[in-house]
Amino acid sequence: MHHSILPGLFILLSALSSSYAGKVLVVPVDGSHWINMKVLIVELHAKGHNITVVRGSSNLYIEEQSPLYTSITVDTGELDRDFMEKFLPHLLKMQRQDRSFWSEMALADELYRKLSEFNWKVFNMTAAMFENETLMNSLKDAAYDLVLTDPALGGGVLLAHRLGLPLVLNVRWTMFGEAHFDIAPSPLSYIPVTGLQLTDKMTFIQRVKNVLTYIMVLHTGSKYFGSIYQEFSQKYFGPNVDFFSILQNADIWLMRNDFTFEFPRPTMPNIVYMGGFHCKPAKPLPDDLDKFVQSSGEHGVIIMSLGTVFGQLLSEINDEVAAAFAQLPQKVIWRHTGPRPANLGNNTLIMDWLPQNDLLGHPQTKLFVAHGGTNGVQEAIYHGVPIVGIPLTFDQPDNLARMQAKGTAKVVDIATLDRTVFLEALKEVLHNPSYRENMQRLSRVHHDQPVKPLDLAIFWIEFVMRNKGAPHLRTQAYRMSWIETWRPILCFS
Ligand SMILES: *[C@@H]1O[C@H](CO)[C@@H](O)[C@H](O)[C@H]1NC(C)=O
Ligand SMILES: *[C@@H]1O[C@H](CO)[C@@H](O)[C@H](O)[C@H]1NC(C)=O
Ligand SMILES: *[C@@H]1O[C@H](CO)[C@@H](O)[C@H](O)[C@H]1NC(C)=O
Ligand SMILES: *[C@@H]1O[C@H](CO)[C@@H](O)[C@H](O)[C@H]1NC(C)=O
Image 1 (cartoon, rainbow, N blue to C red):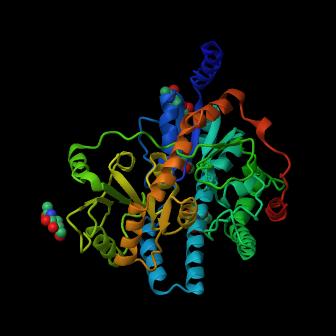
Image 2: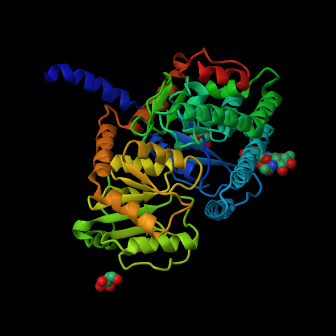
Image 3: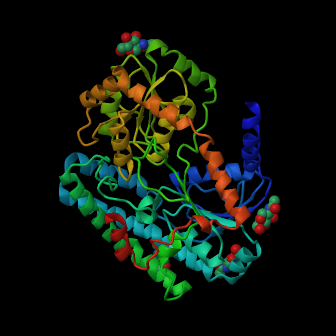
């Protein structure tokens, strides 16, 4: 029996540990997206690949100096650095005080304008690169094997096309929305569009809403970004070049989710699911934190974190959250920046940064209070910790709606959150065992894979290096020139 397994295992291992040292040009997106990209960079570096990172001078998180990579900094002028800090209180106030259709539209418009400004930064940065002959020549001379980029912004896609290099995407969102919608058939009858918190089981009315929202998202994407990307592509690549085709031409789509997270849906041969690729087994906690966790005894610990970008809520909300925590026998570790909330119980520890992965992996951890960003949800699945969700914005409500539909999370509406509502949600997830059981089941399924998600991602990046792309996996079927004409056809078919 051993004889039949061993050769297969050997081939698998030798394929995974290929010694080809390549050159990778990385065009990342700043903020929480950079955290994802860095996971791939660390692993590529460990495998001996040479990495160059293109960054804008206004980037907040992407370091210029790093032992992992060489960086190229392009002057992008100043960015509105505290946009997120200003945007969140604004959003929360609107949700709590004036949640009308019109105020939501106004807020969405503000957000789209901001996204459009980010995209303009990228156009300006990319144009500055394209027009700098010294730089472009040095990039050509460096003979990279591929471009690795996050297509939430399009700079890397444009640069790869300019340099004629294979393209690997680290993706969940493109500038147009959820990435599957850009390449895979996406029947709207059972694939919910982001924004409505629907599941794969929709009523007739919900399907109608799903279709209408899809059309609106298409329209907005095209109005704010699509047309500008199109103009840019035509200016630099010629009148017949369609940006959307350039994007669709990417060799491999490393998708930051999997089917423990996502509802089952049609996919494509060049989509590689690497959900959970950033998750690791928990390391031991620092001594003082470990003492605090151990002191929770049989009641266990609750972890609360709202992600990289959002350090705090409105103080009125913080006070309610603190008051609810104070009534529990559990210990609480809360990532919170800013003023100390009133009503803080002596069971609650406030930290401005916490080792989230190690805490979630700790056996004493009973519950994760999360905003529902993809990274955090994947970590909760990986470690099998049920969620009380407080979605704030972007894809968070939809991510948490998925978890709620799978019976692994309870979602609380920030608009009506007070100590009673929040405490009830905490108690329900703590005391009703189904949440934990469902999450542990998802976790087991997530771990039961032949190859770890990160190894799979690196395999495919190295595959593209060795084979100079992966054109044999790209479909021809949907490559038409107009976003507006092909996308609806794709989705309604
Ligand atoms: C981009 O460049 C244009 C033209 O140079 C300029 O008007 C615009 O303000 C720039 N946009 C951003 C976001 O930097
Ligand atoms: C062009 O790129 C080179 C190399 O990165 C850089 O030193 C130079 O300042 C750039 N020139 C302009 C005009 O930005
Ligand atoms: C990696 O590539 C860059 C850009 O081509 C080059 O400047 C650098 O010397 C290389 N580093 C190593 C360790 O080979
Ligand atoms: C913490 O607060 C609870 C309730 O207010 C109180 O009973 C308990 O003695 C306090 N514990 C410590 C260590 O201060």
